[in-house]
Length: 337
Image (tube, rainbow, N blue to C red; front, side):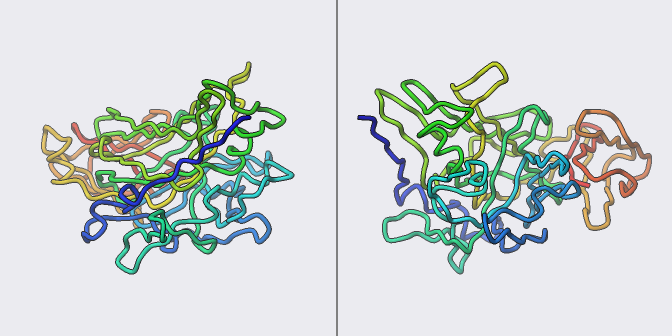
C-alpha cells in the first residue's frame, strides 16, 4: 500500500523571521497591500489575475511581478488568493488558487508569526497569500520579486506550501501528469540575485517519493533564506522528474507567505560600487537619483538599453510599465516602473 507522509514543521522552525521583533525587519503582510486585492467569491482567486494591465502585487517594499494574457485566459508569475479549500477538486484548474494549509498565515500584534497549539503557523481563511505559477516559456524569470524602493535587502525567511492543484496531481495524477512513483521529485529553487547579477540559491523539496512512500509539504514550510546574502531580486524556478516532450507534466505551482527581509547593512554604494556611485528610485514620482556619478543607462528585462541620462535626477515616466535595470558606474538596481 502506498503511504503518504505530510511534512510538519516543528515549533523551532516556524517561529518566523529571526529579526521579526526588530523594527528594521519587513514581513510580508498582504493586508497592507497597496494593490487592490479583491477576490472571487467562488474560488478565492484575485480578481486581477487575468488583467493585462496588472504588472505586480505591491505590499510594503515588495513587488511580486504578475503577467497575464486576458484573451488566452492565461497568467504567470504571482497572483493572490484567499481560498481555504483543500478538498480534491472535480475541476483541477479551479484549484490552482488554493493551498493545502487551508489559508494564509496569521501575525501577532507585534508582527511575528502566530503559532497554534502544536507550534505550527496559525492560519485563517480570511488571510490572503500568494500563489506562484512557474511558466518557463513566458520569461527567463517568470516568478520574480523585486524591491519597489530600489534598495538592497537581506532575505531572512519565507513560508512555502503546496498548491492544491499540484498536490493532487502529484498524489493521484491528472490528464497531463502521472502520480509520483519511486524516485520522483518536485523541487522549488529560490534564487537570490545580488546587485552585480551573481546568484545564490536555496532548494525546497515540495514532494518526493521513496520506496513507495510519498512525502509532501502540505503545511506551511519554513525556509531559511539567509544563504542568499544581500540581494536586489528574488526569483523562483521549479523542476519535476515527470517530464514529457513539451517539458514538465507536473503543474508547477506553489504558495508563498510571510517573506521576511531586513535592509542590507551599509548603503548600496558601499556594497556594490567600486566608484562610490549609488542609485535610488522613488516609484511614486518615477524618478531616479544618482550620487557620485552623472550618467546612467536604463535597460529592459531583455537587456536592451531603452534610456540614458546625463543628469543626477531624471524621470522614467515615459517608459512602459515593467521591470528595468538602472546602471551607473559599477552600481545597478532593479526597479518596477
